[in-house]
Length: 152
Image (cartoon, rainbow, N blue to C red; front, side, top):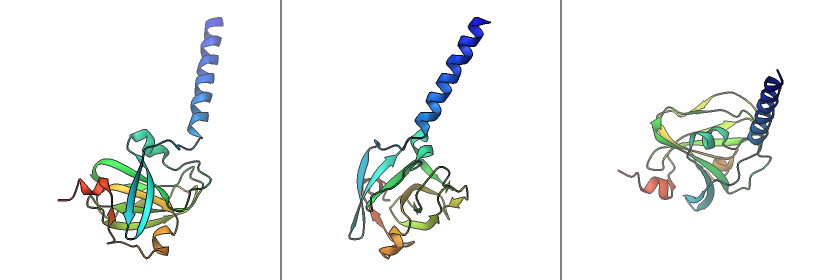
């Protein structure tokens, strides 16, 4: 019985530590520079499943020219939501060549699905309204190393 109590206590401690770690924003991802016309973006890159799952959750603010680029292994019908995301965002669903397929404005802390209109490999999240304030919409082209290596 004593061993069972110790085992349960250790499991509870591990679960508490794990859940606490999940509630911190990820700030240490690799960064790359992207271009959107005359505008420069510094984007954190979320490549792994865990990085993509956490995304911009738990952030209280994000600088104006920063965002997060989600990179997937292959194009697919991607959908995003805003669970545990505290700031309003716009998601740009991006084709392999950097062309914006569609944009979706997303409200904080909701589980509404926001989906690409066709299969894409990339999604760039920026502060809500960032694209519209700069006249960027579907069909606009982003530049940067992820898109250069995929041009056909």
